[in-house]
Image (cartoon, rainbow, N blue to C red):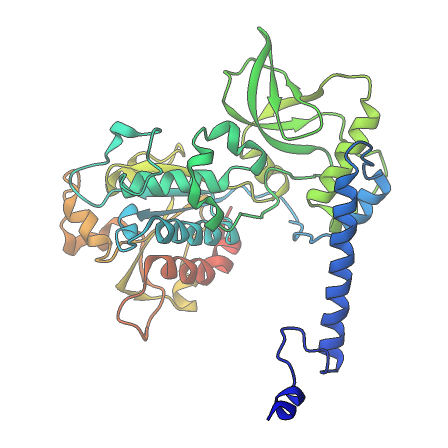
Length: 407
């Protein structure tokens, strides 16, 4: 019995008795990872004499790092989505609420959504008495909770502690998948754009901005402390005739650019920059530059409080009672500058319309508020399509249409 027991093959997570390309490759990767970890540990121990990466090493890392698709041109058109904060009511814990908001943020990031509007679908209005204080707590208004977590997610890592004093209280932050578009660290052929926050005034005509770089940035105007700004860094322009490797437009390339700036501006205390509109990187280069978050007291305010002078020139409502989205329907969509997609909660957009006293129409006339009233998931197999699921389906279905019709 003992001999039989001793002959049994020992169960391990790394079974060395198996062979083949997959296991050999995984074993080799594990050994390399182990050696890499040992190297990092030894490097971290030698804190008295740190050795920074050379510019060549950083450029090499830029080539090896994951690269984002390079837009062919700038983008002037925008996409906005509107959804009710009540979709969080079905989540019983703060962890589940947070995870749901993270899913929405990821979807908006993947499909280049420029504005997220959170509207209240009840008649009592938003509970704004604690706005900015504890609206990240699970017992707060779900609209405020969603808005705060969306803002937190969209903020670059190096600015979170500066812009969110309750950063340490966000115990659920570890559950969030970080957004990873190239926004906030974009390396362009002509310049370096960065998101930053004003930390102090330099004088009456200039301010100092923390952009998460090796040096602070001196901007060309006085801006109140604590304000988040988009900065165009001077001195990062490429030389005439110099080609920029398009596969290196990522954070590692930005590190290399910073190192080059460090050499070029070694005698200066600050990097020099100018404040630009947050939409400038998108319009000039086509890179996604994150989303803005807006709260609406009612669904009518989604339309009337638009940040665009002429409002939204293409509005789409989603419902299981709508017209199925087919190629023929997509072909009828006109050119647009600012598109709006509206999603409902568990009981549809009609609930918000019925609760809105500023609207003259009833729930049965909800589709009259939109240019298109669409069912983006016809012949669904489940009784209900959740809002976060409808968001992904709709954005994926309309992505090509938006790209061709946006002007």
